[in-house]
Image 1 (cartoon, helix red, strand yellow):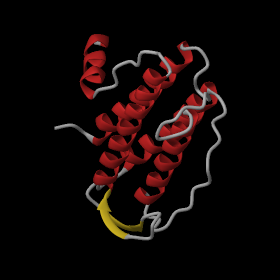
Image 2: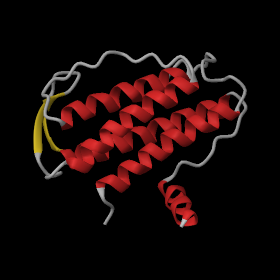
Image 3: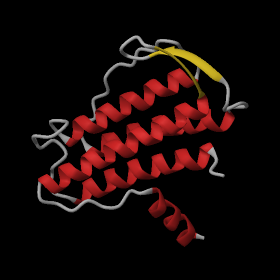
Image 4: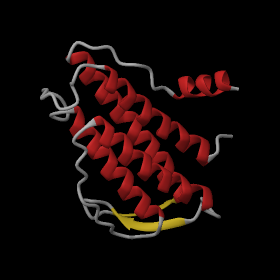
Length: 161
């Protein structure tokens, strides 16, 4: 069985891996493109806000308000995600009961009740989805992506041992 910490570690890895890959490419982070988001930067700003929102919901806030996050460069994005993901991992690790259910309201004011565990799975899935958006944007701009699948994460872990 995959622990929540292991699963969330995959999200941390995928985000960092994608930002590192972007840092190796010509400056496409803020290049305008016709896609789901207008720029790759906009994707990362969206993911950061949503990750922060889910952390507050996991902590029990019913209707958290998260200010938009400006990530004007790849280095700033790396720093801000590292801080946020450290806070999230500390919360996940210290959670005594990941099956504890919290009530919250979505951004569209829909009432929900979900466990911390379900919220963590949602965060990781959301991040994976948007890594796919960014990979598609790379390709539209003429650059290769890099694999971010969970199996690559596991393989990298095994090769470090």
